[in-house]
Length: 96
Image 1 (cartoon, rainbow, N blue to C red):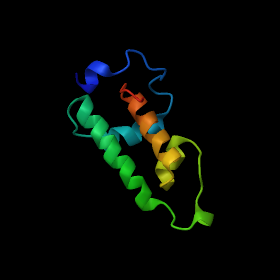
Image 2 (cartoon, rainbow, N blue to C red):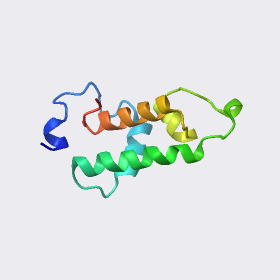
Image 3 (tube, rainbow, N blue to C red):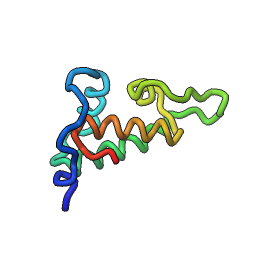
Image 4 (cartoon, helix red, strand yellow):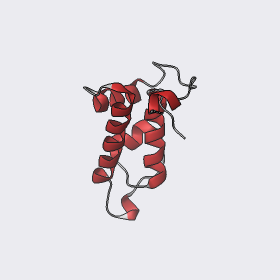
């Protein structure tokens, strides 16, 4: 069974409702073929978010919208998980 077969039939996301997030996803997945490859590109993109995160705890900003987390970077696990789930939801992928 592949990811396409296990993906949710319906996702509570309305295309166009979060254009900035959609732009990030489109850029991250450009050239990717198939659902599995698109999900893998999102995971790799998410891993790079920690490179932009401040090293000092006092300088960190936690939480916010997924668009904000993507723009500033983070290495906080809850931030990274939220970004990954939001992007996968946009792709109609499984986020569980």
